[in-house]
Image 1 (spheres, rainbow, N blue to C red):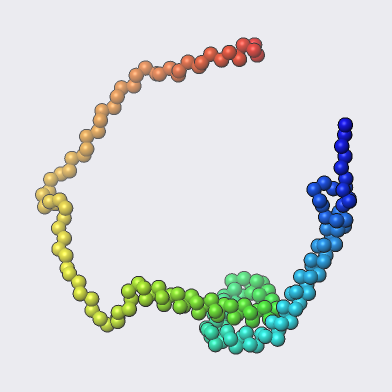
Image 2 (image 1 turned 60 degrees about the vertical axis):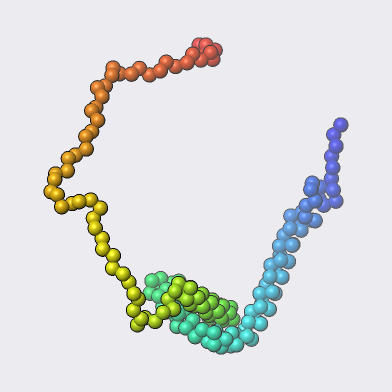
Length: 181
């Protein structure tokens, strides 16, 4: 007896996408359209907020601007095409670039705070002008090297004379060798 099962979704087993390949294509296109509108809305929102984001970046850490320009100039010197592409993307995607600058400023500030905490924990809280007391320790060599005795080389064990060439161990008898004779 043969049992054939079909379902209402194009005869696929396991509950496929409604409409088969066409349904999958339609869902993909709808996903791209939704992503376009979401990114467009985010771009417009960031475009309106970009001056505020840049001013906030200046307030948080003003050093981010010279640092970014220095990195761009270094990239322009080492790889001019990449530097020009970065500059074009910064102009075309200016709202996202302003968000990047703000996030970079926040990150640099956080890194500076962590560096200050680490240097404080390391015990570097003393003034540089203070002298630290120390004790001079006298060292003496481990052995008495004042004697000028020649050092004798270590004795090597005598080489053993080679025994007659060792024969390889005999191969075990394989019962299956007889089948292919």
